[in-house]
Image 1: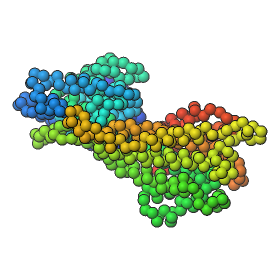
Image 2: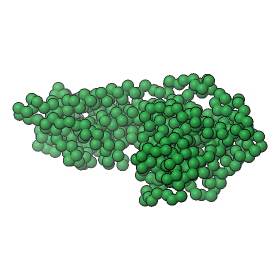
Image 3: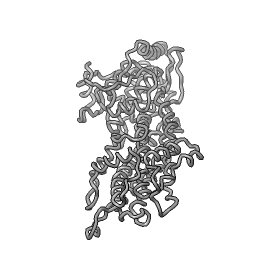
Image 4: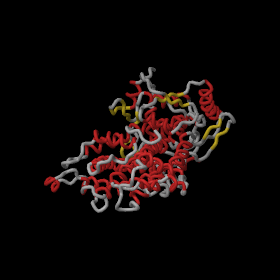
Length: 518
């Protein structure tokens, strides 16, 4: 089997810890997944599969192997039907709905599942892991419906589409084309896998969907956090605000490290030695003055959420686990996604609050009652044409709409547990729904940020035209303003902004600007 030619760095799956950034790099095709060829690693994987096979030969009882699934765990499977059971598991779970996961999201899911199985506690064959690796390396992406998981007993329904594709069933995206999985596997030289008795459960009974999505959400939130800080500095200058609100001694008196870090970034982005531009107010309104207190919550949450997400990413999270070394079958509930549910509910709340902060900043900038001398709606029109031009009036309405929808999505999913599957799954995590909600909040918040890039470029240009001295921006922020000025023409005559907005959203997701701590 030939592998695709690549010069990308590799992420090795060997049972060792991965970071969020590793999953994001694979998802964004900035790195290639490689399964370890280390003999000790491969021997450990084979030992688990061999132990399961030996138990079966000795008439051992293993949940989901010699019994039915879930509430059917008391049903004994006749020995001659044991090999058919995994096929039935992914078949009857083929009931997903909703939009398919994106290509990036699907790669993240495959990476998360591969890493969990690489822990060597799932009793699966090395060939199964190699199959997942080949899907990633050849970018053969199962079409996975996004809806249908309650987050315990893991992401059963969406992961059934991964299991089915490995077996040559259902559909994939490959090279931009939707086609039958069997055809795609044949094209890359991969033989459809025949699942061993424990393998269907091992693929599906885990948290890979919510965890993969969480890795992408964390990455996007981290960048949005730093961009919101840069935009706040620009809005302080555009709105003739006060840099002294971010004084180092002031913030030393309230020792939240994230809040202090945001204030430090703002000081770096502002020419703090310049005299105050605001002769109208001693204290700016909260959306400027308290920006570190809002953005700092997200900054402080990110390290904690990283810990939760990476612990889940580096866990064996199916059931039962196979301890081949001590010859034990361990029945438990590691498929429960409570930590990811908390992480995603927390992250979407903190991100939406940042979007709301920026929305309030824009409301100040476009209003002549609060923007200290800038034109209404930041219109760049002059003379008699000012009467028919409206600047950012509609953009501010759209930002308000996007912000309101983001805030509406912050209801925690994790508190909406349902009792399912004949009351066997009577307490579930809702982690996958929380992750999907978080990604939607990020999508809306990125649209807010894109609009704020337009507003900051417009507001700073208009402010610069009113004063002889340079804008009170630090060097990095000033360089970004110059770059925005080449990217976004000044709005003097009304024009549609949708294409520019979409391009800016894409640039945000590609992290095209170097920001603090890059």
